Length: 232
Image (cartoon, rainbow, N blue to C red; front, side, top):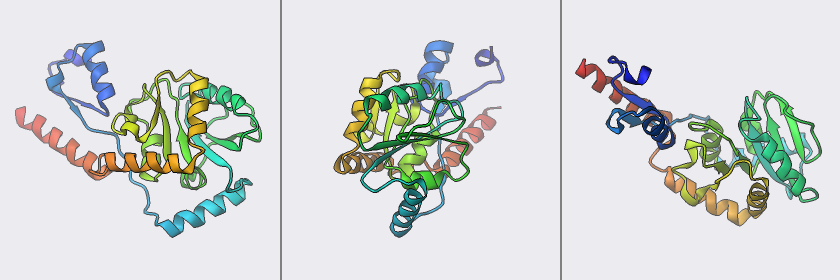
């Protein structure tokens, strides 16, 4: 096993969620695990640019400002909870909610649930969106969620995703990613702009130390590599 190979000195885990799996499933000593959180860098965008890009993106998509827009993005939609979203959207039929689905089409598009296929400019969709929805069945640490936090979007995530563990009440976290009733209720909660702002502010405070930045990620990885090299 790789975990027992004498040349393997340390494990870099993208989240505490992954660290627990290493301990519980592979019997790795916790002292050998360092958590180096997943991270992203996005182009800077000021408030004026946000407003302009939001208006332009919504015009292109034919979505008015009164509609709450959720964004889902995945290379493997089934794993990341697309079917739960489909069922939740059926519960929300007739309500002013649209979900944009980026990635390989995993179902039929409707007026309220739009499969967009592969998307080159995710920032355009983030500009149009009010929140990201990611009821994944497994993700060590979702970049889609991290990008949402970095762009100031509200988040609905899953207890099976390491990216939400720092956010506290800054995200709505589903205990069961297959629970479409709970997802529909979470989406209803985030139709309230005040509730979205509250959660976004909490998430921003929770990550104000640069937890999801590449600068922090690379510095911590370099520290780990130098420490392992010094033990050789």
